[in-house]
Length: 66
Image 1 (cartoon, rainbow, N blue to C red):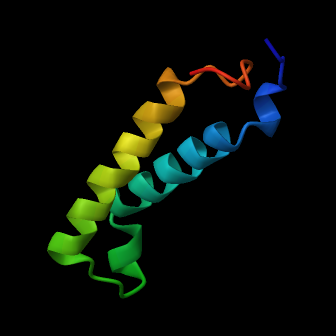
Image 2 (cartoon, rainbow, N blue to C red; image 1 turned 90 degrees about the vertical axis):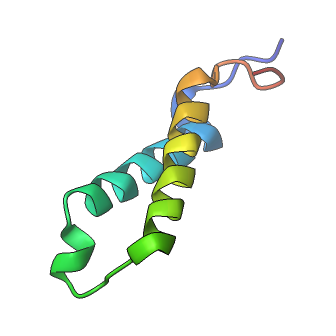
């Protein structure tokens, strides 16, 4: 098993980015700057939440496993 730093894990950073984007959409920050996502935005928000869940379940210290 190859050990990897948690902070260099691509999955961790993808999950963090997904969560930040989801929070921005949920709080209405995009709408405040003139971006109205509508139904497509809700679908994207769902996908971002799935990425976040994947990042939570992933073990970033184990490079070859989940």
